[in-house]
Image (cartoon, rainbow, N blue to C red; front, side, top):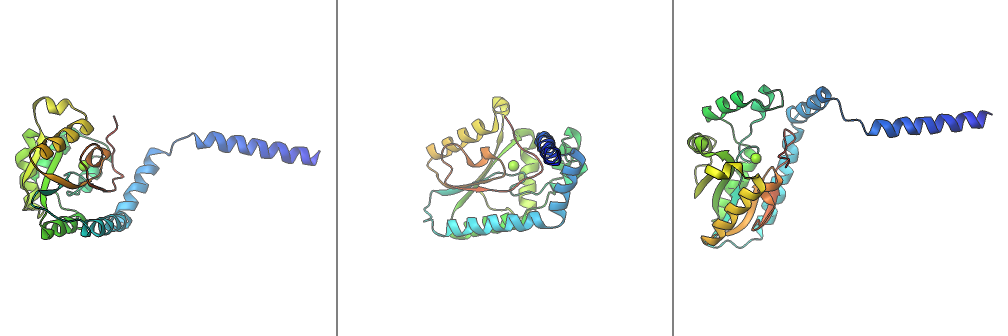
Length: 215
Ligand SMILES: [Mg+2]
């Protein structure tokens, strides 16, 4: 009888655990964990490792006149963590646009280090962002403000491009750049669309726990 009770308890515990595993994390707790990860500095330790690894990989690459590395902007070279916090780790259009208009978003110093390294090796830099053309000027200004003063071009979405999924848009733009004669030796970004698709070279995926482009 005792053994049967133990067996039943075990089965019930197993079933309970199985059910629990299907349940998501509480949103408030999940947000708090993300906040802690960034504010404790752990996020920046992870980012540091990603960048050091990338620098090691690029060290072995021969740079030609046509060599270019494509960087995304938000959560790649510009750190919008404080904005994300202001928006309660969601998305509030008005707050987002006001923040971007200030053009004072700080750089990730770690990614700036990678940018500086690539420039010192003689690579071209191009910024390719999903931001729309009305924000071209403020984005350009913000890049300069954050220390990204040398680059060939900044590409934003315009016209019908704004309706394209990021993956399609970024792949299309990279293909156009190759047709213009660029040799893409690397892509740096926080979303799959930044580093996947044709002509990506060395893929440097910047960690981002704040949001994801899901299509
Ligand atoms: Mg991004």
